[in-house]
Every structure is written in C-alpha cells, then in structure tokens.
Image (tube, rainbow, N blue to C red; front, side, top):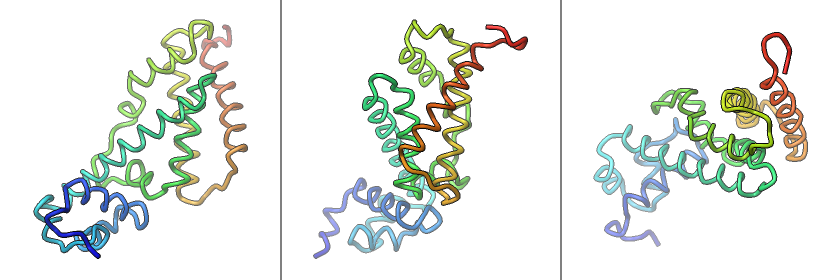
Length: 195
C-alpha cells in the first residue's frame, strides 16, 4: 500500500529521485517517475520542488553526500594507506552506481564543480596528513600526486561507469598501487630529473 501523501517528506522525494537516477539515469528524472518511486501522486513532488531543476539539484546534492561518505569509508577501511582506500572507493562507487556517478561527473545538466573544486585543498591536506611526515614529500609534491592520481582514478571510474572497462577489484587495486608508486616518484623529481 502506498504511504499517505501527507507522510511523504521532502527527503522521501529526494530519496526517490536518487533511486530514479540510480536505475535510469539523470535524463530520466521526471515528476511522474519520482512520484511512482515514492508511491504518491505528483502533487507532493511539485509542492516540494516547484521546478524539475530544483529536484535534480537536490538529488545530485544527496548523491554527492553519499559519494563523500563512500570515500570516507574507503579511506577508513585502509588505515595503512587511506589515499589508496579513497581511490578504490571512488572506482567502486562508479562500478556499483554508474547512474549516480554519471549524474555527478558525466552530466552538464546540474552545475558541475570544476576539477580544482573536486581536488580541493581539504583533499590535499587529508592526503598530506595520510602520507605522513615520513613520506619525504612536501605540500607542493603532495598536490601534484593528488592531482595526477585523481585524473587517473576518475578516468578509470568513468570507463567502468560507462561499461568501457571491466576490471576485478584486485586488478583495480594493483593498477592503482602501480600508478600511485609512479606518480609519487614523479612528484618528487624536478624538471631535470633530480630528486
């Protein structure tokens, strides 16, 4: 039985919109689909979100929150290498929820953040802290490592989300470890090839 429409909260509507995006993609987000997913008429959806772009924005913001939680859990799952854990979680998110990943990173319908915003100073600070003082890397080198790794990880995730690449988790981890080692070395070498 469908819940009474008075019991449909704005968060219920956002959750339904996220479900629609997850299964059918951002392009499929309509009032009717969201209402059907929430088990209500379109009236509460329209009342909560007077235009479709506001509904899409709220859903994408919620997906971004879920994405952040997934990255944090990935980092926490690898106390020995939280940066690797974040990279694995980034790719895992794209693999598990390609519709969500596409809404965040492969669509221009909902104002995307710039690359600089995605690899913000707080991410650099986290990685600098995670690598520790024994890493031999200064903040500028860490910024280079983060930027290079994010480009690589995002590319892999996009390929997986669009079914252009299929890889087992162990293969993904091996690739990320190899690339991280190379990028880390490259970040500590100057233009003359000297450390």
